[in-house]
Amino acid sequence: MRMRPNAILQGGTAVPDDERIRYVEDTQDTFKLFLKNRYEHYKPTGDMRKHHDGSELLVFEWMYRTYVAE
Image (cartoon, rainbow, N blue to C red):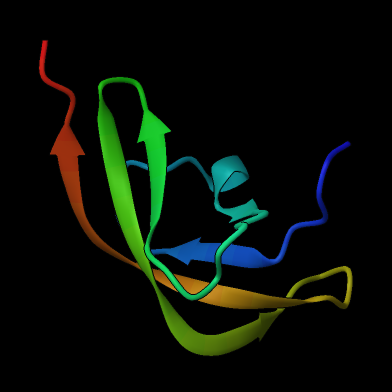
């Protein structure tokens, strides 16, 4: 079952637009998005943004990226 999106990822240049609106299970903690060979790290801001479908999304702000060791 796919969960309804509750977050928008803001900042970080490497994240495709279609990956920015998503469901985040723990909205109080940092969120790690795995892309190719790295993780993009985001923190919750407490701000909300209205999505085009009328839903309210919690804004997560980009912090940094880490690379997967080979």
